[in-house]
Image (cartoon, rainbow, N blue to C red; front, side, top):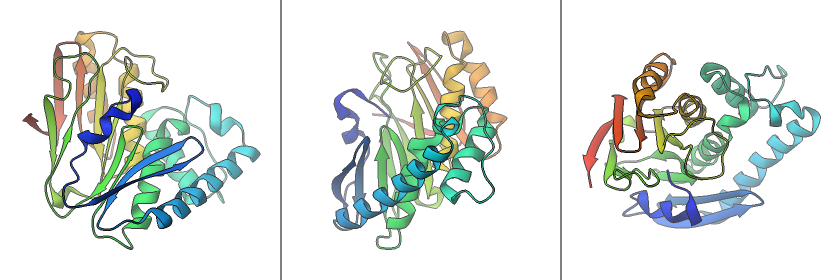
Length: 241
């Protein structure tokens, strides 16, 4: 939901939970749970990465494809989730990787904690028993950190993922300051945010990108910020911060 120097991590409201960081190679997660589950989370991250790395070694096209890609029928569930998310959004499977990893780890931790928030490079998986407010980071736009999204307990588990063409290192062919997508699948939210972000070159493209998000089965809502313009669609409850 933001990127530079991980300043965005304070934007996820995790009151009442214990926060901790888990890092394995390029994977850098900030996790909030009812207790310090760092050891368990580290184990889950390592397993998740092994699944991905093993499949990519056998199928290098999975790493580089920017278009939907079919995978082996006997591939791990994580690989199928990423492939299906990419197919729905019309992008390559790795466009879903951050959301998919966040959800994989988060769902494993739900076996030990009733509430879990996993942030992975601005892409979030959360399951909560209380309202949570997620502040929106949108680069240099005046809306950045002044707009929040309320997520209610009954809406979780939920993925809330953001793509930006002006902030961060992820590949984007658009120029949005922020495209945030909500879905019960964090992988789909991630892929859809990337795909919608690719459509945005200027503020006039906001409606087109929102219409695109509305056409994707499983996407619940979206928020798009371009410079000083903002548009939203679907189940997005906005708050002024």
